[in-house]
Structures are given as C-alpha cells and as structure tokens.
Image (cartoon, rainbow, N blue to C red; front, side, top):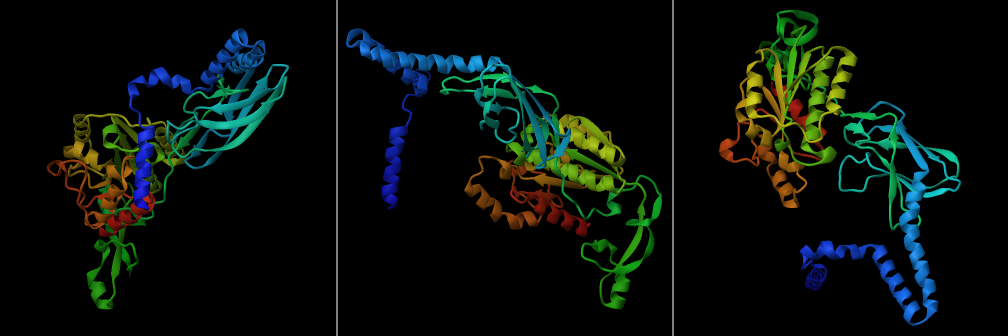
Length: 449
C-alpha cells in the first residue's frame, strides 16, 4: 500500500511540477476567468460573422458579462462611503472589543457583495484579511453593523486603513474605497501572575530603611515560623530546625524601597517566529509580567528597550502608561548595537536586581553585556522553538534536551565557543505552554535563592 501511495505521489508531482517558472508571468493571466470568457466571446463573434449570425447572441452576452464584471463594481463603490470606530480605546490580548461600521449608500439602487478588508490581521500577513462580509446595503440608506473583534497580538488596530470592497456581480474585478477610521484600538500585551518573587536580599535595597510590616531577608529578625512550600532555603533557621526536628524559617525585615531593572532584548536578529507566538512577543509579555509583579510591591521599576530607558511611574496609571508603550513597540523589534548595550550598562548604578529577557541568539550576540556580573538573572528563550521552520525532528531534539535544560545548560544555535555561561538562568523553550513553564522555573529560581 505504501508503494502504491509513493508511486501516486510521484505521478502527481510530475504532473504538477513547474518546468518553466520563468514563463509564468506570460501565461498566468490565462488562469483568470476573464481570459476564458474573452476567448469564448471572440470565438462566438467570429462564428457569428463567418458561419451563422445566430452565434452573435451568445457572443454579445459574453461581452456584456465582461463589461458588467469590470465596470459595475467601480460604479457601485462611487456612491458608497463608510466609517469605522471601536467601542473602547484600550484592550488586552485575547479580549473582545466591539467594532462599529457605518455604511452610507447614496445610490437609488442597492449595493451587493460588500466586504471589509485590511487592518485586522495580526498573525500572518499572507492570509487574506477579511473582517466582515454582508450581502447588501439598501438604496439611499445608512446601515450600521457591529461585531466582536478579538486581537491575539498587541498593537494598534486597525494596523492599516481598511477598505470596503466588492466584486459583484461576477467577481471578475474588485473595486474598493478606504474606510474612515474614527477611533483606533490599542491592544496591550497580556500579563500573567507571578506569585513568588526573588528575596529582598537579591534586590540590593537602595538605602537602609526597613519596614516592620514587610517580611524579607535584610533587616532585623521578626520571628520564626514553620517552613512553607516556596520558602527559600536561605531562610532556614538550622538551630531551631535541629531542636524541633522539622524545618523552621526565620522572618526578617524587608527594605521599604527596592529596585528592578529589566533588559528587554529588542534586536530583530535575536528573535524568531512571527505573529503572537514569536519570541519577540513572548519576551514583551514576560518583561511586562515581571514589571507588574515588582511594581505591585512598590519597587522602583525601570525597563530598557533598545536604546530607551522607561521608568514605570508609581500607581496604576503609571503602569497603564507603561503597557501603552509596550503596545506601540515595532512588530519586529528595534536594532541596537552591542557597543550601545555595553555602554548603557556601564552608566548604571550598582543597586537593584537586574533581569535580562532575551534569547539564546541574543546571549551570543551581546555576550559581554548580557553575561555581566551585574545581571543576576536572565530569562532566555530558545529561538529555535519559536522558528516557523521548526520541524518535528527539531521538536524531538528539544524534548530530548530537557534534562540538560533543567540542569541549567543549553545548546543554542550559536557556536559553542561563543555561548555564554547560562547556569542559574531561566531557560524557556515550550512555546505551547510557555507561561506554565516560566512559572515553574521562576519558582524554582526563587526557592533556590
């Protein structure tokens, strides 16, 4: 059976193989329905002139079909205008928003086969971006349409000016008119909850102000309590543990002010994949989630994206403005040189926790900068897992490397001699369940701190 299937595939490949690709531009026009109708009309008219005049009737009908198919859509769209607006100004990824479309028809006859295209596709630019299709708009009328739109990727929608198009009646020619965009929708990156944070000792407080209400690792001892899952081993009080024959941890004061700096690698050469599941989009989501978790703890949060430094202001409004900034970042990142990254790091103060969010390619490209001793943690996304060209063999290889990854090692796409030391960093490679994998490995890093 397999032999017959293989022979059938060979036959089909021989039939569909393109032997002269250079001649496609000269013959591909014959695929259009208008070419067949034009040949049929020419043959019918020739038969009517030289053989029988009755053949002029189907020839004339075919000519009328071509004329209507090419000129009627343009005529219909001359009397149609439309405007588009959103029911809200901001939304998160995968959150529904209402879209309102108003279509005005100034013709004394209905317009059929209208479609709204462009501006709503966020994952694959090669797919036809069709947002809405409706049968007809009445004569001398103003019609309003509403539907729910769910964006799976951050950005400003519509991404480009939509068009109202029609190909009625025969689909031979399409005509369109741009839609007036009254208001846009800003879709912000989604964040996920981070329940545990690195100990306060890792944040290197800026000053010696301690809080009696916050439990940490740096101030005076507040007391002891039994060990709970998630507690760091650094908090274990070994004398009390030996006395009670169970793990006892000590609670100390925490700093009233701490600092976090997040380095978001925006280099397009360091990321792979397209759309909402690319490594660039997931890097933004991880950086936003980290900033959100520490921002809730009243820490001073600074995010470095490319050559810019964004200070997240205190309060809910300050973090909302930060999300708006992330939503407007370019779809493919911003190129920045290694010298610029290295120079930016040298100007920073020595206080606070630093977390780099990058890929294995980014670690290799900016090895001296990302591997600096000041960067205590790094979230490293494996670029090969996000590449669209990843085959089943690549995925099997990724699963086979799980033991090495859990041990803190990683085989990246770059040469081994240029690979930085990744021990102690958080390695992410499960695209289908990324948030869960990040949460598990982040908790492991917090408990080992």
